[in-house]
Amino acid sequence: MPLRCPTCGAGALRIDAAIELGSDARSDEVALQVVSCSTCGLEAVAVYEESRRGALDDESVNHAAFPSDAEALAEVRRVIRSCRRARNADCACAGHKRARAIVRTQTEPAGIDWAAPMPIAFVRR
Ligand SMILES: [Zn+2]
Ligand SMILES: [Zn+2]
Image (tube, rainbow, N blue to C red; front, side, top):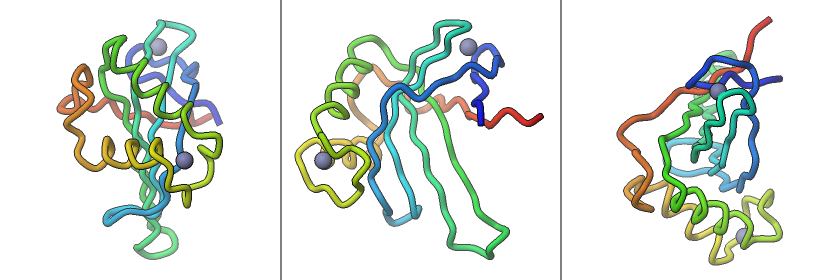
C-alpha cells in the first residue's frame, strides 16, 4: 500500500532503509527507517510503532517522519546498513543497539527535530 508524503501529500513516499527492532515497553513492533518522497524530495528519519495490546480490532499504528538534516540521515543510514540482518528483530549487534537507543531516547543524533513529528498515513483509495 502506498504511503502518503507528510510534506506534499503525494502517495509517493518510500521506505529506503529500515531496521526492525521488535517490541519495547510501549509497542509490539518498532522500526527505525529512512523515508523519501519522489515527488517533493523529502528525506527524513522515521519511526514505525505498532501495538496489538488492545482488543483485536484496536490495533494502533504510530508512523511518523522527523525533519532530518543530511548528517543525521547519513548517520541513520549507516546504522541501518551496518547490520546484515536488519529484518531480524532479535539481532543484538552494535547497529541494532544503536538503533534501539535512538528510538528510545529520541534525543540524538543531533540534526533530527524529534519535537516535530510528521505523521505518515497509508493512501486510502
Ligand atoms: Zn513529498
Ligand atoms: Zn543487527
